[in-house]
Length: 86
Length: 225
Image (tube, rainbow over all chains, first blue to last red):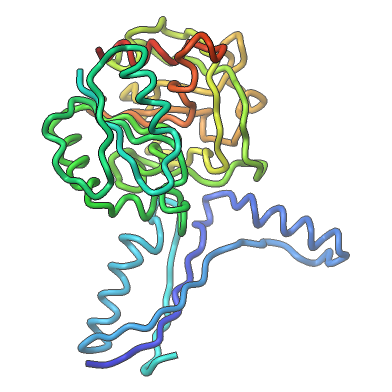
């Protein structure tokens, strides 16, 4: 069995209005950072995973993301995994 | 009509529903703990409002994997009735028993209010106690009630008459100004294609006792009995 340290990124799909992102963007403008645009707020999830191979770990992570960690109706996900525990 | 009311850790409108089904309508009613799986005796399952599992990750996302949910999915697939109110609506979308998703309110605020809600049509077992286009006054209380679905899903919902409730003004006009939370097409409540599963953000159970000032929600429950 191999251990992996995993970082999962969940973001709202482009077609979904990110009201919190919009509010933060206007906050940044008020701080004087006029050049800021396109603020989107997502979720970052860390986890350690033990699996028989990297391929199986990838497969499990896709399932976890589709079933629970993200809602495909409104969100996209991506993940990175590196061998060893964080 | 026997009602079963699901209780998750964090449900907080479960007893309000029982007050209506048992207290006002004298229907047999029992609570169903989220770890139970046997609901064969139940006709209508109600998933009540609240903050199941603290709404961690996404509203309804964790509740969706409770042991009871597989039984509820089978119950729905058998054509029996399932009503999700507020957090219950969120759970039903997470469980894919209803299309779309409930996202953060347009203006980011938690909204607690009494607002006009238009009955889209009464050709449904849920709305047969109302007139088509009747305007109800119902409470809402949510931070994530902004109904979102892709355009083709919205079109399908409307083509199949699955939209039962929309946010409106007292005249029944549905405009961006009468939309409290930014929901696509002012949608406040939808059914699945078969019509036996209803999810709605407004709280009919909080508007069923004259002593509380509003009774427009009672006809929804009474129509089932």
